[in-house]
Image 1 (cartoon, rainbow, N blue to C red):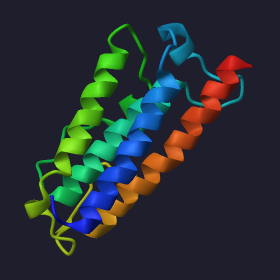
Image 2 (cartoon, rainbow, N blue to C red):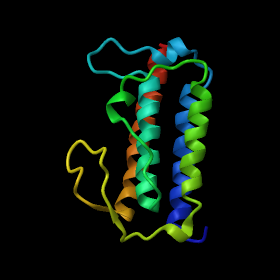
Image 3 (cartoon, rainbow, N blue to C red):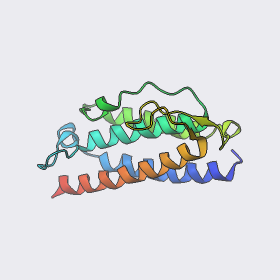
Image 4 (cartoon, helix red, strand yellow):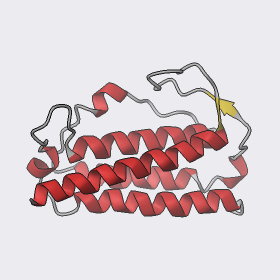
Length: 153
């Protein structure tokens, strides 16, 4: 990889993905599935599942690869079991491998994100998709840290 934008994105994403992974480390499936008492709050497994599925999808769009199958509403119904940690590690690897395809990155290339709740048929550039993947993941890493802190309280 020689593109400095992709190198920077990979570093930022690797750090954020590691933080998301760390938020779930050492927790039991029951803890991962626990939701705070307030309405519409998500469990750590839901936060992680959505963050990883979203990041993988936006990176696929950014890098011009076939988009993975995605059921966005189902992400918010996710339930952890003993295989959750392995699933997280596999999604992290998939995300980072996508950014190693530096020759495939054309920041001006346009694509559509059919999973978007609004504007699903409006094209975005690969550059926009890459930046959105990074910022959206960072937002959910913050949510994951807050949830981890609530679980410890």
